[in-house]
Length: 250
Image (cartoon, rainbow, N blue to C red; front, side, top):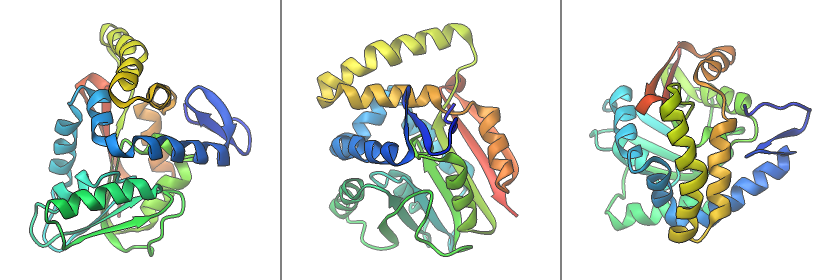
């Protein structure tokens, strides 16, 4: 569980580190993996993350006139899916300039010039006005923030009344056999794939450990409620390998 056991420290994988140290280490991880970010997600989920993201956008149900903020937006794939609905706009926010740069360059390569904006910012101190966006998403990013509760509160802050928040994240598998198989894949196969394909075993080892430290589904739902989200719910995907959490600012 990514909980602060002492003031000023938090989890970095299975290590306990000062909050500022985690922020620095996370930035370093994503600096290294930015050119291969989508490959990273393919390895982490065996390619199924694309289906999970499609489900998240289906649940979000974009409408013309809406503006999305995608926090820890990486290379912008969520935002570009949102923009498939005409008349929408999207802001991608990521703490690492390398991630923003990679996403912006990819969008330009695909001719995406309008309605898509890129900013660097911390999920715990979003550089947006209160009540300024219609929807907020974060996909596979919440477990990397130093303090989950302030980040959740910030994402609620920037939502307009009636706005929708969705969090897609690797989570906790309930079925024992599937959990055992997933552990074998995660701790044995995935770091080796990270080394062979991306040349970075340590980054993938951290990502596996960060999933195990992330709050379980019901706990994260409770923490969303505690910061003010309403109508909070979650849905397990692929047996709990991932979970989609939903909340509203009403």
